[in-house]
Length: 333
Ligand SMILES: Nc1ncnc2c1ncn2[C@@H]1O[C@H](COP(=O)(O)OP(=O)(O)OP(=O)(O)O)[C@@H](O)[C@H]1O
Ligand SMILES: [Mg+2]
Image 1 (cartoon, rainbow, N blue to C red):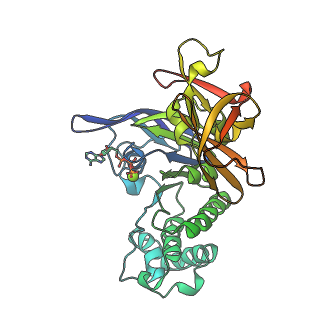
Image 2: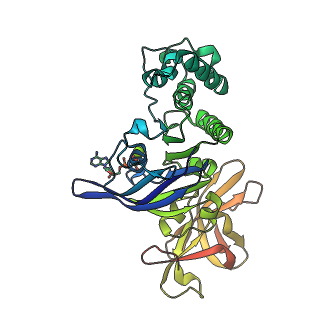
Image 3: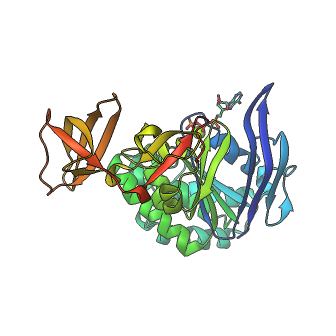
């Protein structure tokens, strides 16, 4: 187990800089999720920690030591990818044992470690099978097992669940979280799925075009987003953005007013809006409404509340404590 520190990390491919200076100190045993849209630099950042990409400037430290010039093999990390990258012609046992064999680990110890990981991952009955004889979830577990047997100081995950169907993803997400808690191994986990980020992370790094817009605990980021990008990216449905002048006490420089869908309520008086369509999702109902100024907003209601019909005019109210403001650069003000 180890701390991981990134100090002013940048990355350029040719003349194009894609990571613009990331600083973060990750605690021993912490679960960090790197989340952001496609192309924002998540994999590149992770691959620099792994040693699969060089760092253009800045320093990667693992366990307090600078590792910029160390080969991936010598960084005491294990990586789990989206495509699992299992060897198709090898049994589950051999897939898990392979890295240890290469490293020259004695046979008896390999057997012991693989057995231990197989128990942990409930793969005992599948050790003789080939990857093609396994379900997607089982293959994912084998990929995890291969990382676990190495007993690394740091786990690196790059979208490990994105090949699985929705239900299995939820199940595997729980398994990964429990496993990480149990093993206490410092973990960096890349995903573009903000729900996955919210549920797995001790802290998340929300990336936007090669920058860390915000680093913090999921609920802290949700409640207190520092940029318009973070406010719109974290939370589903996303935060509503209304013209700032709809609030008469907007701070100087404010151009947008942000309010979460659950913080908009229907009232007798207030801002008029027309219900465009409703989505009854079971536990909750979303009302999509248009304001007179053309802004579309979403109101989240309990499923049991009486819902207005499509085409009806409603009035919206919100609490001053539940709104935030952004300036023309998308920064909080
Ligand atoms: N080898 C490379 N050469 C040139 N540009 C690259 C290379 N690898 C990545 N990039 C660019 O760097 C940027 C970040 O890519 P990266 O793969 O890190 O994104 P990502 O956040 O992981 O996206 P995704 O969610 O789609 O996997 C992209 O603009 C990408 O085109
Ligand atoms: Mg990626």
